Length: 114
Length: 114
Image 1 (cartoon, helix red, strand yellow):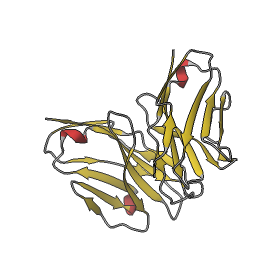
Image 2: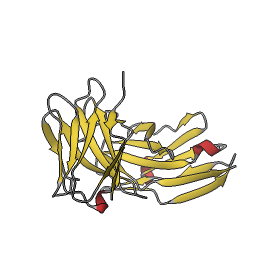
Image 3: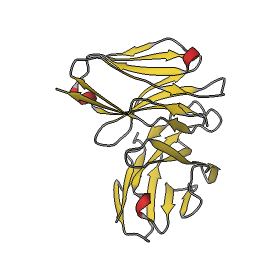
């Protein structure tokens, strides 16, 4: 049973380009969470999705960031027109349900904007 | 905001010393869960423990132990006889019971010197 898979592990983008980060949850998990870790900081919640629905996007920047979790395929975190300040590690976690259920984390995608 | 506070930014010890990492949390929830994660230099997040707010028993796992004090809203983590491999950033987190998102502390960087 594979764990949470994130790809790519490392992503380099020039300012103004788009970044697409993928997260395949653990088998049987229908809840996905995205977190961002800026350099030298802790992890901050971005968005919580359940299949085809955004449940909580209170941590998402208002512009340029979007997330989806389609019925088929991985969850995608999309950052348009990236800026240097978007450079961070982006972690995805999946769980079977919300609340007290343990979430399993992926290895993270390290985005560098040059 | 119902935050998680890790007051110690960095701790440096010599191998075989005991070390305690502090964590204080805020919550208005009656039921909640607390977590500790380890982030080694390789960057992934390693789950260490989950603690239910109804269970105030201290827990020991090998060289690791956790002291949950509901009266002081603290969930401290002690490593006994520290080893160089314990060098990492340690995060304390609380789960939001209604959405399942994790609220992380800022992290404590532990350096264990040989």
